[in-house]
Image (cartoon, rainbow, N blue to C red; front, side, top):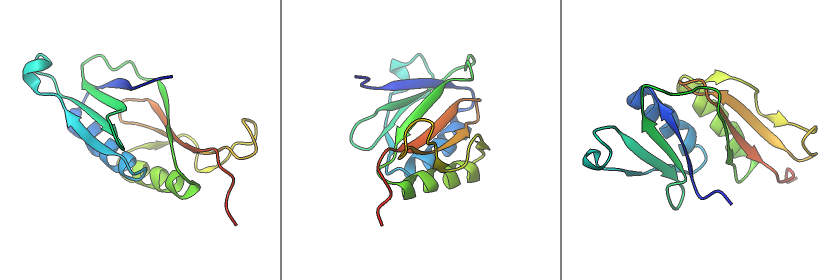
Length: 129
């Protein structure tokens, strides 16, 4: 039901580097930046695979503590997301693994982004043998 979502980021370049890496591991990338003449001079950009689904908006008011979970197509993407996010300045909030308390095939990883948001990659598919 959600078409797209976004967060405020305090340091555009730092957050862009973090999300370029973390989203790249999921096969997504920065697809669009809105011209600053349409945003009042602030940087705004959207990430996705086919269309911008997740937006960054430069702002002094970041409001940390939000949670966003991104779809991973397989468990290897969850692992790659975690490694890329950690290498780009993320903080561990739950290494890749099964979270059976959600359901038996819930495989996720959690990382705190540069503004304190809890971002996750999750795959709901069983591991292939």
